[in-house]
Amino acid sequence: MKTHSIYIVLSQTGTYPSRLIRFYTREPYAHASIALDPELKEMYSFARRGLYNPLNAGFVEEHIDSGVFGRCKNTRCSVFELKINDEQYTRLRKQIDLFKENRELCSYNFLGIFGVIFHIPVDREFTYFCSQFVAELLKRSHVRILNKNSALVRPMDFRTNPYLTRIYTGPLSLYRATISHGQTELQAG
Image (cartoon, rainbow, N blue to C red; front, side, top):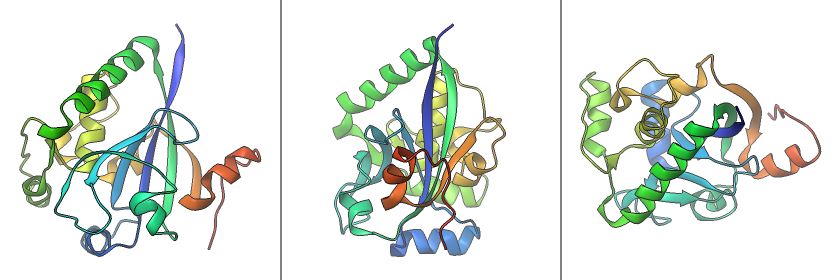
């Protein structure tokens, strides 16, 4: 059966909300995204829709050289590869198309962040925080790599997941240049 690679991107932008999350969790990353190509040109998450207002948030298509990532040039990241089969990939594409079609219904699950803190899952249709969204996409695509409710998944659950292969760690702004030169990992200071 044919396999496809998808990518889980964990990042730390240095914005006030990401610093607050990092302070609370003591984890290196505060944000999770899913990408369907190795160059991260097709990448999705739940995050702020504009540059400055973190409360205006929902389903977004992310770009590593514009938006929040473009503004936060010192964004640190780890990129993980996950191989899935053709059926899972088709399901994943359909789920992403569903979110694209219903983008106006999507909102950020601010209440769910508190649910994670108290270990109480907060599930509402089209309402997610970043790692919950990635986990839910995988679950709906029948990719079983997490053994917990999507509403309780944190970036750490991806960072420590044995099914994912880390292919890069370093500045997000250098990711494409690094992989285009055949390097698979950059450990930058």
